[in-house]
Image (tube, rainbow, N blue to C red):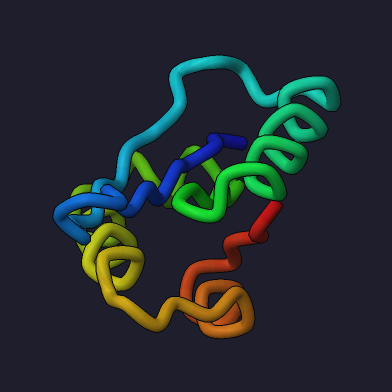
Length: 84
């Protein structure tokens, strides 16, 4: 599993999508969930590492996460991602 962050810059509105290089543990999942509750500019998702490893899928995931109206249901349907 791999954790991905979607961060919206509060000043410019630009959206960054990047992977978190830590191993996904229960503690990391709890930390990222709490962090997303505190910071409304950051959302975290978990995806299978083999999906992210495929360049075409990774590019599609980034494209979808950069949209303004990302829904957790749509991400789960398209990429089997789970929002924390």
